[in-house]
Amino acid sequence: MKYRKVHLSCELLNTLREAREVVVITGSGLGVASGLPASRDGIDGLWSQHDPEYLATAEGFRRDPMSVWAWNSVRRVHASRAMPNAAHQAIAALAKVIPLMTVITQNGDNLHESAGTPRAIYLHGRLDDAWCPACGVPHVFQSYGSRPLEYVHSAPPACRLCGAFVRPGRLWHGERPQAALWRTCHILATSANLVLTVGTSCQSPAVAELCYAALAAGAKLVQINPNPTPMDRLASHNLRGKAEIVLPLLLAYAWPGT
Image 1 (spheres, one colour):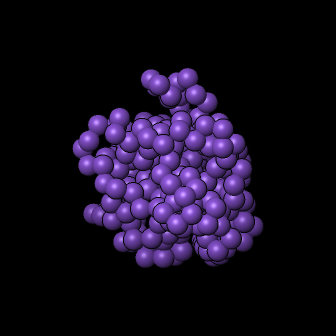
Image 2: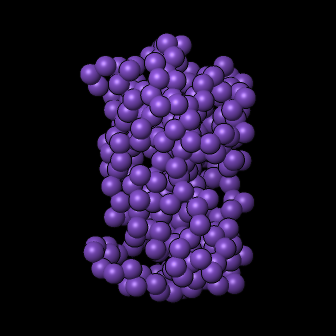
């Protein structure tokens, strides 16, 4: 079976149908069809003058908290206005035919939840979370609704308890997931029959580690991504294409009528 350059073999379809415990690992490529930039895309306008790698570091926040907070605010508001695309909806449909399916996402948006996926773990944190690095108290965001983005270009709010700058809830580059969350992800990966990566280059150390752990425990790895990844040689199947095209097609062939 061929759809453009995507080959859906009987072996692939059987791998999907026979899986009982599945982990779906999603990356920023999943949100492109929803109008969200992939993590390695350039930044337009004002942010083209800044290094996105620097804006996502603890050092960047220490030196220029205003710019880092504003950049995260723009990302948060854009994500809050985005809608799930066909790939998010296909993943939610997959959860109905494979009840023991969990999404582990690198993304900070809530599009998996909006699409109806029952279990999504945020490996790198959420864009709508923030907390005080000094005392750990969480920060509650106001709702921006349809107000212009300039309303969110403000300084980081002060912690309501100790007065320190609140930091974004997404992990900085180089930070590890919280220990309890990481243990959960590792248990899920090593218990899975199948790991399906979607829209991710698998270059995040945490994602690569989960894939290696799953493979060592006997799982099969299937990748859906437009470009090659470092995991290609270990994957059972590499499907080259956009997630919003490939995933619905894969689901339709594996479970006609879903």
